[in-house]
Image (cartoon, rainbow, N blue to C red):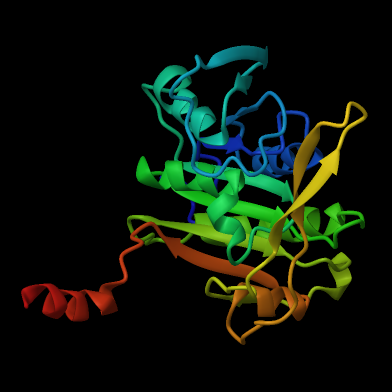
Length: 262
C-alpha cells in the first residue's frame, strides 16, 4: 500500500476549455507529473471557453494524438472527458480529473457557462474525483500564472489526500489576482452571485454594413458576501468551493407540494 502522503499510485486526467496549447494546461500538466508518472492530457484542439456542459450531438468528434498519452479533441470539454473515459482509458479509468488552469475567473454565475467547470462536472457524474482550477485576472490585464503555479500543488494535494469525497460533488478552485507572496491563505467558500447584467450584447456593423454582435463581459461590482467565492478573491485568498450536482431547491419543495395539492 502507498504511504498516505504518496500520490504516485494515482492516474490523473488533465483537461481544460482554453485548448490543448494553453499555458494554464501546461502548468497543470507539470503539477500533475510531479505527483505521478501516470498523467493523460485530453483537451480541446482550440479554445472552447463558454461551452458550458455541452456535448457534440449533431457533429462528429475527432481525435488527434499529439504525443504519448496526449490528445487533442475537436469537441467540447465534456466531449474530451467522454473520449478519455470511453475511448482512450476504458479499462483503467483515471482516479482524479484536473480541469484548467483556466485563464480567468470561474466564480458565481461563471460556473453555469464554464467549460472548465463542466469538464469537472462530467468527471463527477462518472464517479471520478474532479477539481476545476482557475486563475483570476482583471479584464484587460495579465494573468499572474506564478500564483496558481505556486499554490495549486498544495491545494490539489490536500484534496487528493482526503479520505472521503461526497458523491456528486466537485471542487471549484479560484486563485486570486495577486502575486504568490500576497495570497492570504485558503478559504472554503460557497458560490456567490454577482448583480445582474455581467453579460450583455454589443452590436456592431461590419464593413459591408451587415450587423453582427459580441457578447460583452463586464462584471458588476458588489455582492461580495462573506463566505462566498467572490469575497475570498476580493480578500486575495484562494477560494475552494465544494459544488454539488443536485440542483434541486429542496427548501421550496414543501411550498410547491402544498400549492399543487390544492
